[in-house]
Length: 474
Ligand code: 6PG
Image (cartoon, rainbow, N blue to C red; front, side):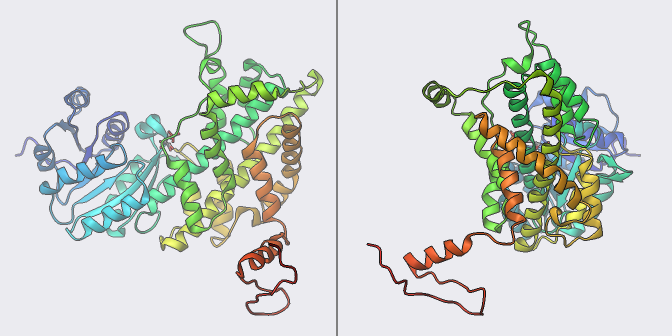
């Protein structure tokens, strides 16, 4: 009898995310081999003392410890490291082995890797994982895409380790090619937008409403139990309650007001232009992170312009908070709407064959953008998977009709008070544009034809037209 039976899955990259996924898989009954160059990480995983988890720092021994055909997950930083790992791994692999990249790789890199490895008989899959360290350990949302046969082989394990929402696993096939990483990218774009919207609400409450941290904590906790119920609202409530260990104040007030980013939000905006999907709220969120990092310029300009805010009367605070809750509700619907509509466009453009209802359903649990709103969004797309935008779903029309007026008055307040709220503005402008039967694009077409003979179409007859405009402007 072999005292060391072959193991079911391999994991390369034993940082916190990788190690937590290994433990999650093992809890669900899968035996796992881990590999990392860093001996400390190997030792830490082995120190868990699990009989069916073995970690190595030798790639040959690691690959030999696996059942064939192998299924090897990668959790290493996106970029050239993924290629380096693949090159290190390749001499040890054989036909039909599967490599599953679980990092936040750019979908075009994933597509190139799929094509390059296909010719060698190796299946390469891009798989998005969301939920941070806790999610990886106890149930993330998992977005796999690529070769359907390879997917079928790993699907039972993914379903076992994923979070559950309404008893359904928060994982499903996202589509062909790099669809898994594409869906994760858009997930992150929505994540950026929701975070920006929440931070704008924070600024309005703090600067105009004069809410202190205790009141903010109470309000966000209250919101987290209402129609805004979501992971990001809940963690925001908890953040306002965290004292600073080095001073008497609260930690949030000690953190620099310059946001960083690893790129997935910007990638979403960049590719939205390719697939011709308007996502102005995500665009605003990316721009605002960049603007926040321009601290020195902001401080200098603030000295020159000296904008001031009028404080709200104490008696009006509650009403203002309620209005803001309604405004955020409208903004959240519009933001999920933009992201999912982008996925619809991208699926057609890249031939992913992504089912939007399925995407919404696997975002209901485990991931950073999970929210009760996604239950209703899932229902709407399940009733009509060809829905172009959630704003058109019958059950959302009355909700948005009511809440958009709160969004409008909050935007007016923000403008009056010199409080930047670009994501809230973008939501309102998107809503007003999407629901306008007529937009002034006829004038843009006329201008294009005037200066460049770019032609235009008419609203009273078919065809392409050009006019020799009467006036010549030098
Ligand atoms: C998730 C997150 C995660 C992302 C971080 C940091 O779904 O678990 O999206 O994948 O890497 O949120 O992103 P930024 O550094 O770009 O803010």
